[in-house]
Image (cartoon, rainbow over all chains, first blue to last red):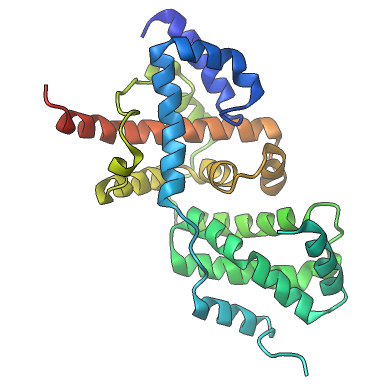
Length: 80
Length: 199
């Protein structure tokens, strides 16, 4: 990787803690559009996040777990 | 989820209204269960955290002063129980310094040609296993930030409040978590790309 790209990637990484589409990233995003290595890098970070979301969908609470929870809190009986 | 409605339910629950507390449990149990499941990756442990969280909330709701959002308070309790459970099982505790040495140096970043693969091609069993292994190896202080920010889509401020760390620390940890996961998956994806592309 060439030196100027290392510097840009370092800056890019500092911004990656933000939302990936945060306005603070605009200048870097512009560079990324023109730089294949940086584009690769940003795209694959975004892809990793997306894959994690796809592979961890929302799971319903199992019925027996729900029942046990309400029972342990003594909330399983309707008030008379 | 209506925050005004939550506020009214919390007020009623604080006065001992059990039906209001039941509604709060029903409104939030799925999110709490999934938060714990994503951190712990085990249904039994996530069920324990769900129970521990609502038991603690039930016992403490009278003293909830409303300065923070109820949801943030609930998430903070659930995250703490999840992390406590995770720490019991982990032999290695990574520090911020360990991760800084590993993932803040762009010299170590490799560029790989797998970003154009369709997402559906990646979601096979082998890939999932690799992803789970990568998550397993992600130190818990980073895993919790990654899950709260990128999966639960909490703001930086909310994540900072839930974890009791500064906003800048949230950003640093999130960056390292994303880079770490990406680099772990890159090793697998390189092999995948080599196998898929004839040279």
